[in-house]
Length: 325
Ligand code: ZN
Image 1 (cartoon, rainbow, N blue to C red):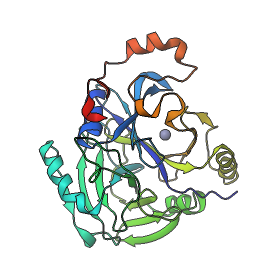
Image 2 (tube, protein in one colour):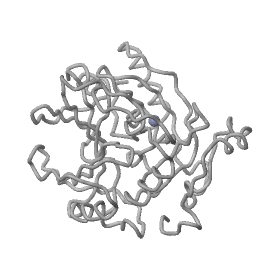
Image 3 (cartoon, rainbow, N blue to C red):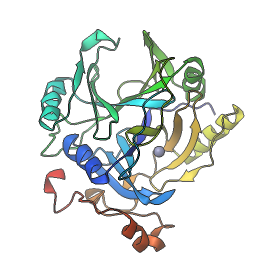
Image 4 (cartoon, rainbow, N blue to C red):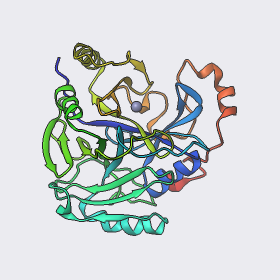
């Protein structure tokens, strides 16, 4: 079965201090904490999931935040910018809101350097992760999370795109098109855009060709991997067979509790994942209470006390922080 992903599922990055990370994504960017759990491969570290009201695929940014983590280095073989989608009329609001939060931004206007005529605001999170807020001219029909700090009319709609930095483009482009079923959209100087499915916000990836850039180093402030959507488990299993047939080194199917995952590296060096849309974040707590309590998968539940003792205390949404819900 040829692989045909419909778009981005999530982006996972490494953070520093967990509280600072949560404050930035919840208060400054106005996302919802849709799950508080641990890194299943390293349960002494949190895994925080931010997204829209229900944590729909395509809305998700997730972090492994480690206090004292070494800073990473941006470079080739990485997703160097993660872009979030906002309404066209909201760029000005965001510029002010971010300035008021002490975040420096720079604005790329209209068609200055992209053929999609997108207005873009770029900035970094507290650990130096490169982010952008992008207004796609065709808009974005997705429902946002609404908070007092970031009202729905301006709120982030979900992921817009990622930028993969590579030293040369051919093999990465081949993986995106022949491998994942994306289509080539257009090229602006050293930036090539690809679109999944019907395209638009949440289904885009830019490949930035920077032959002279150093290789990236994945640590705090950099993206660990980029996940693409598969509708369900049988489709994911068929796509895994397809990758194996193409000679791609892909992991076995891993149970991530809220989705199933396979991982492989694109030839330019970035770690990619295919994650299922199912079962989603309401599988182990009510939708209204997402993110408020530490959730563990069944196989880690027996070690809850030990795990909780290792984790730093976090001030989460809930009764103490009504402005976040
Ligand atoms: Zn992932």
